Image 1 (cartoon, rainbow over the protein chains, first blue to last red):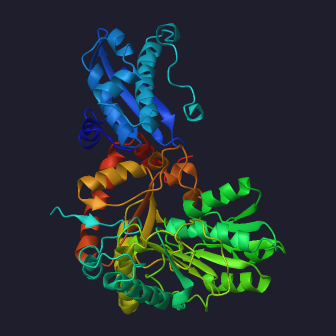
Image 2: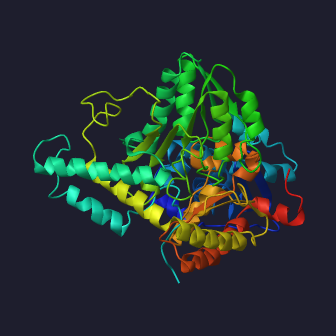
Length: 142
Length: 395
């Protein structure tokens, strides 16, 4: 199993690590049994993601995908952020080993879960907009 | 200060200077085939004979009881298949422990598909095989019992003499995978009533690609590789003369320096363990005293093993882990679950294994870097905040 240089760069120097105290949306996916937990914090102003932070427990790929996903959506509109797929995260990282693909799925789900939380806080039902919010059990998939 | 510290000697070891010097002539001027009649062929034959004597001496065996193989894995395969075939009149039952290396586990699984019956004995929380349970598991049709001398992930040393006596009393054959133990702790095949023993060169400062199998005189096992009849028909294929000479030299070096190596490595390991355990929410895995001199293994909660190993690597430290993320599946290693660790705890496994080349300064460096790396990863972890507020641990 080999990580690309991009993955190693994002693992060694992860972007946007941390928490946002007054976040407008927070999403957490994964579980300890699986070995990956990702938590994403969003600051949203006028439908634009003005700030994003993450905290991740997991392998090198889990950290790198979180870092890349946050970088890809920072400054983007919610609509654009919702279009972010796990393949886009993987591509931006110059690929992931096959056994680590689920980490990129987790990153996509964490982001969607945070956006869903943002809508919920506004009193809106996120399901029609987002669909699966990453709260589905991840472990049983593979 | 940055340094390079190789602390993964259970994975493999560097070739020592004396081993390299011993083997080099057999790659250059003394390249003869040991089966050839002329002088450089006879030189190779003689070198193999001497190496066989040295490996035998390490185990308290007779030279004629040693067969050279291509790896420890090959010796394991040969032992299980060969012994079961040899003992087929007695029965088709095999007993192994739950924490064996994959060379044993997967061979046993393959044999099961071929019609053999396999009992996998659980171990206690330290990784020790309860000998009473083993005794109770031996049946009149048990042909072979295979229990590793020492475990590769947690370093626990099994009560081999007791197990050997129990197996012999019951009339079955006893094989031990001594790949991690040979050369590092005293082994005597007669005192320990061992019938078959596997070892590997690259775990004792010889190169990769050479191993040996001890087969007690009188035990007739089937070869798994047929051909030109080398190694007394037990293992065909032109002898890896340089590798065999290297293994012989490594065995001699280990035997000559065993006492001092054990003393020095045990002291280094104990200092390493004491230092690592200062990290909050960390614990030792494996037996506290019945363990290999150089093996320190831990679980560190709220960090994931693969991340830990990659981060240590960025500081020049080579270590390993049995976490699920490193195994390429969603399950942590069978050894960690075998000693009763839950999945969420086993994610934070870390193995540091010291070898003869490691120094006090290496241990100092690990103890300086590891806590920083753990802190960095924990600060990045959403689990850690919860940890700090809930000392009983996460559910």
